[in-house]
Image 1 (cartoon, rainbow, N blue to C red):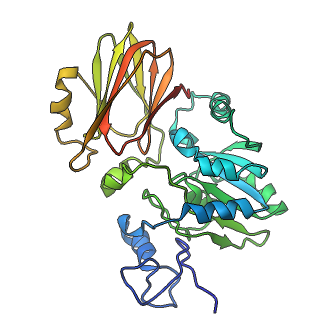
Image 2: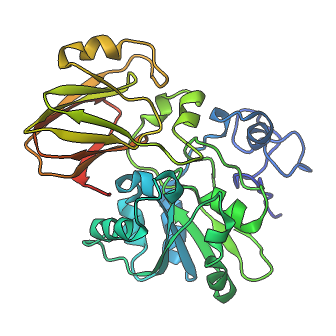
Image 3: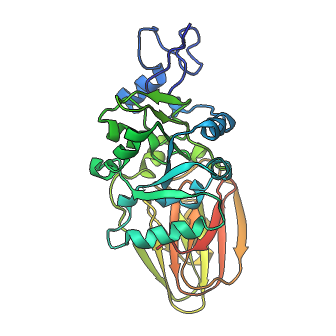
Length: 340
């Protein structure tokens, strides 16, 4: 007997356990209850699945067609999943750089491509092509059609990279479930196109649990649909930036420098001694009972980014004496050479 999958998330449909994944009131339904609620009521939290990264990686390793690797440019380093990079070796890989439209148009694609290749320089992944795409602009997806005509294709990438959104736009329909919650797609979904099959795959997860602590409203805020207007802070003395109650970054400049926030949330600048008082204030993005962990980074060169997994990144233009991060223990933070 064949297993019927939910068209939205790929879960096997079942009618026996309302609390289990894939529950539907009737096997005649095309969507599980969770995906139905997502589509009609924007109920995000109910769609989160327990996804086995190992099964997804096994599928990628066994796949012989064209792989569309969807990379979220707003979360570049978070998108570099070690297991995925290993699975992409010796594969035909087309890199789809998603969410380019969130960055200002003044930032050149060539500059972004150089930054991506720098991040991949030590990885044994060969790219056929790099294509900048957007789920809001179908014209950016037209270069994919030639690949689909030639062979089966699979969309792969990390959680919330935008695979299902791109596929919905490419296919001109809204079958696949899309939400700001990680692991909305629960299993590999095979889609027949009239040419060759396309496979949507579950997002691979990076070891961070910050998103699990955020409210639905905060998750929506962190999933913007239009270009982010950068916020620029000029620092000439030691000062602290506040990110809701998630954490803070204290920067001691060598001389005057600029900090540019590409985050879709409000970032405040305060004096270092006011850090704790400001973290306790009500804000547009917050978690319950944060447990802060402090880390001090030594002197940094000019033009670096601080990427905060699940949030995005800020850019520092100028030399620093020190940088101190003070975030909830679930947050993952890296410092890299500037993307832009």
